[in-house]
Image 1 (cartoon, one colour):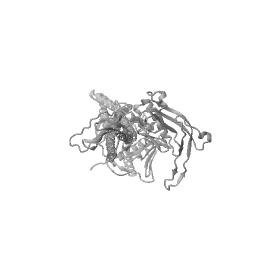
Image 2 (cartoon, one colour):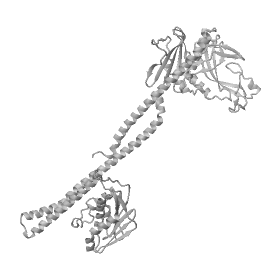
Image 3 (cartoon, helix red, strand yellow):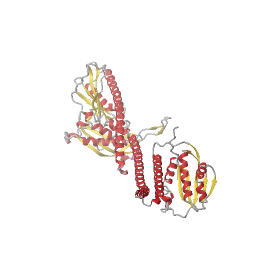
Image 4 (tube, one colour):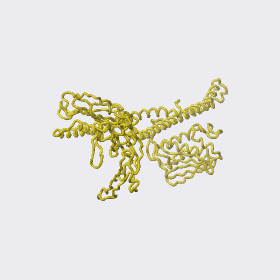
Length: 606
């Protein structure tokens, strides 16, 4: 396996990145489709509401005299109010109205004026409202809109208006000559000098009453209204019609007025930015002067005509108000929205959660790859070491066999013929034992290994295996002691556990001192064996369970120890979820076996 550990991050990140983008993209698409359907439904409801208002007005005016100018004013006001019919903060609409000849005569637009102005008391004068696009540049319109938004944001029912908007019109009220924005200073209890103040623009004095605040539940007045008087003013913005000579401006009439900026109302959750988006849309303002209104034969209800379905979703209704074929007016209602952007906004938390989940999964997978790599690398190293060790271990007995066989072939020392044969047989048996142990190690590493599952007593195993070692124990005059504080019982394969106990006891006997001692302790959760031994350093214990490690270089092959017993023991115990440790005791060596983790045991199927 050549791949370096760090290189797992690149493919993992790439794979999860592609998956994340695919899932989030598909999810966003479905959200976008749902939003489009919702916008279409809201647009339809808005169109129905507009048509109902127009129809009611037209049929009501059939019995009255309705001048064409009044009709135009009605439709212009309707077009400038219609955008609030769409109950959505993400959907913008506009209205274009056409006469019977299909010529445009009213459309949604920014507007100065509201068709009338109060001169004094209850006296009002009619004058035209003016579309700002006909007079102001884009920059001028944005500046005026900014002041309008400032006035809306500073609105306080208990205080007079901070700003005053005025227009100057021609004497007949049909032409716009100027627009003015003043910042007004108000005072509740002015002195006589302040009361005498006259506004420099209009030449008049102004007073304004504040609103009364009322308890919503009881209707009780919480505060009384107040009367404020204008005591000063400052011109903060103005525009004057360049086509009108300065000397003519003095003949114009100045009125306080209101400004209409679609989607900038305080009660409709409007804002300057939303108006700006609506204002800069070519689609919502691109009504042709003459329009074609055609419907497919058999059409019962006019459909939404989809003009664009991409990043922007744009559609329109073409309608006729009145009798089919001879309507009062034609109307085109347009909608515009950004469903992809809105869907992305709705999905922002899902994007964040998905990103965190992706990183968590990617980290888990990368760590799993790393663990797999480490295991395979360790296995590869173990196999390499095993191969080298096997070659080293086989080299000596094969050399002895070769040497004795050559002596037999040359008939040298016939008197030692039996000795040579005995040594050859012993070396072959040693090789056979080595091969058997290697096969045993291979079996323990195999995924196909199936272990038995039964209750096994370590105390019972200890007595059984020590009985097999009784001759050697007597020969070395060893004393065996038992300390029983409970029985260490595990669930597992009795045959393999017996081999593990045998190896530990055999080491305790073989490396013991003549006349020494073996002490076996059993408790509920542990089993240990101590044996007396010659003094030694800690270093041998660090590698005691390594393959082919024999500790003392002067021991090993001549004692029949090839450094495989403890290696096999640890493998067997690990398969049963047991942990084995070796270390120094007061007078020798102690080996302890205890429970480590939940065992991984493959059951034998009988």
